[in-house]
Amino acid sequence: MIDHYKIARQRMVETQLIPRGIKDKRVLDAVRKVPRHLFVDEAFYGQAYGDSPLPIGEEQTISQPFMVAVMTEALELKGDERVLELGTGSGYQTAILAELCHKVFSIERISSLAGRARKVLDKLGYGNVVVRIGDGTLGWKEEAPFDAIIVTAGAPEIPQPLTEQLKIGGRLVIPAGGEFMQSLIRVRKTENGIEKEDLGGCRFVKLIGEHGWKVEKEGYEY
Ligand code: SAM
Image 1 (cartoon, rainbow, N blue to C red):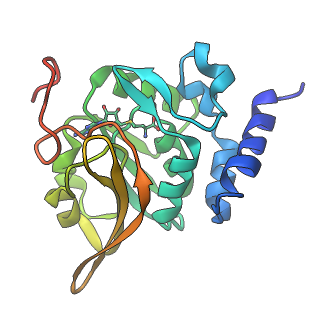
Image 2 (cartoon, rainbow, N blue to C red):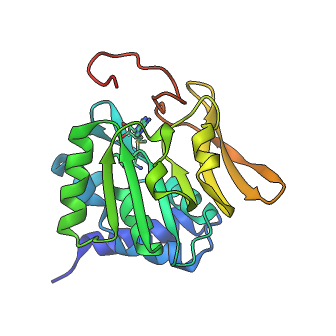
């Protein structure tokens, strides 16, 4: 039987990622493999391989495939890393990471999203992922230090616990800046401190927490 979704993924890689400069073969293979449509509501299956974010409920989104690829490539994963992810959301980025590293520690502040992501990840057999509900801006102290950290929500500034929980030589990728527009920043931790690199403009939903934006709605307080 023809797998139309597999063909759509292949096309997505060839038309959205390679022409825009994504080169890491392992990242491209992971995007070819992970069924993005299963991470969105069935009503959005037909749009799952388009060039855009999509709603996943709770006013949150699954990120644009290109942005997932850019951020993942920037982490420079080789396969043996322990990676911290902030903002599990749908779990799609989590699955991409799980394909590329040893273990993923993912934190989501909205329990309904974390629960749904966990179910899809389990169904797809990602046993190297732990999902926790909470404020990711505090990091995950018991599991630190991490080889790489990815933040998939926009922060006003880089949360200090995250740089503290990064290994020397580790990479942290985070959208940081204003409420509506941010810069994608890659931080490298060296013996001499941290080095920051601006990878370009981006637009993410807010990172809400103690070291992020403050809670603005009832119901998700800590
Ligand atoms: N990477 C996700 C995916 O592939 O579906 C998309 C993530 S979405 C753009 C951002 C997520 O970050 C939302 O699910 C939001 O609830 C979550 N978030 C915001 N602040 C957070 C925090 N302090 N800790 C953990 N998750 C947070």
